Image (cartoon, rainbow, N blue to C red; front, side, top):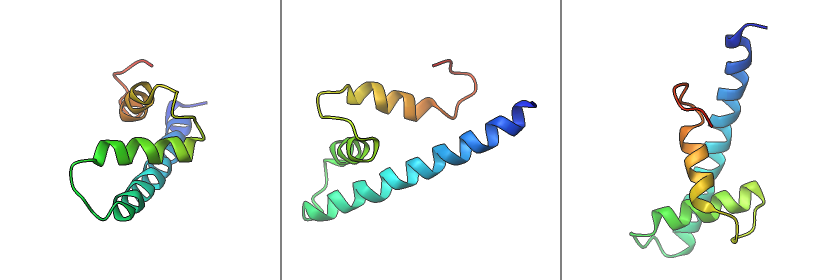
Amino acid sequence: MPVDTIDAPIAESHLLLEERIRRRAFEIYQRRGRQEGSHLDDWLEAEREILGESPKDSAENRATVIGHAGRPDVVL
């Protein structure tokens, strides 16, 4: 199977996941009264909720994987 055939669905899935996390993080930001300065905490909380992981999991590792998943030069 050509690589482009596999990469397109993966890329689309990644973008959909990222959009879901972005929307949830914004909802969390709004719930906190739109106070600036906690965007990373909001993102990581949204990520935990959507991916169904507990707060004890490594948020930094997940953020790294999600942040680099679309880069072909990065091997995960």
